[in-house]
Image 1 (tube, rainbow, N blue to C red):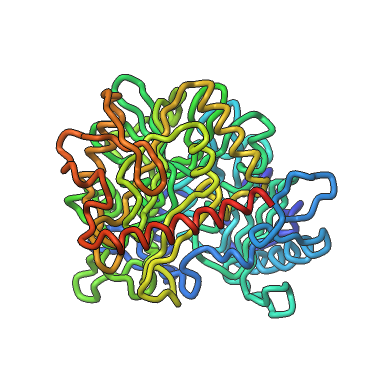
Image 2: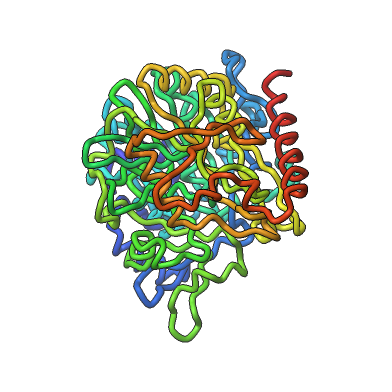
Length: 512
């Protein structure tokens, strides 16, 4: 084994006498995962794994190491503090657990811009998690010549006793922003690995005047960059993966002095009801050897992936490297954005399909980070949709106060003359129960129109006062007037007033 790695593991009190596989290639990881019974191959060669009972992030089990020297941490329900002794106790348990396992160690990078790039090292007991890391992070091709800056110790098989932490959960995710150490126990869900690294970047990059962003990004033939902010299920990956524009990345980016750069080297796409006709690039990438499918059911006879099956979770995922996307930007770096889209899946059916935001509205809707939840996406939801607000479209991953990110966005938008749009990829003609989902071809056409910079006349939205185009070629004119799409104007007004009130209640969080 590599001598430098041995010393590094010793420094972290990991002393495994079992095999330690260091930077294996993807094929070796697939074979190891199948051999170890971690998953099975689909008919197309993708590796399908089950992470139940944890099929999504566990926010109540996430903790930050308290640092008395920092006054900018956003403490609360999202960022819960732990003491140094609590952090060290978990790290000790994880080190002892990993010392009893055969291990996979992967060296990766986060951040395509060399000026802000960080070296990452993941230690895990599961081959498939190592494969996810190789798919999603940037692979340098060589072992790190110097110690990593971000350390991820993933002991997914370690179940914590109830008395270990306040949540009394067997799972825990602890972060030390100063040392850039991430501890994961008790949950196999790979999103914890990816999003914890994102959280660390969110905590350290603003000091370098880099805005970390939960968004996808692409670039046109003329070099014009577009960003797509949005929560899960709003269309970040879908709208940014298009043959007409080169994909920079689908989820996490930084915006610094050199322009926009991808944090990752892959995509972590949501695959529930994945359609090969509407999303051909994601479909092809998901049905490929070396791709990891999380909680996607395979047909017991044919082993074909059933992307319509949400029996385990609606949060089914596909983790694949960007090299699977034909029209991509290999450098992961581009210029400053010309257009920014805030995506929302409005299940109340009252927001316009597209609107151009002014400077005040940019901050308002960025801080709001609105989308809605509907029945089937989470246990316990009834038939009515629920308004959901996630600050800066990334609340679970923000260790610092929201004003820091909002002010940075406002300044950069003003400096570079960006146009910012609100796009409703949700419902029209009624709410989730009575209307229908905004047709994806219409949304694509509206986004393409916005990217083209075509001049237009605008009218003011009747509810939110937003500036909505009067006409977009190829789009039914009534679609641009949401109230006209409803059969019952009175019902539209009632639902619209309810949603507007929810916005106003939420924004008070930043004025209290």
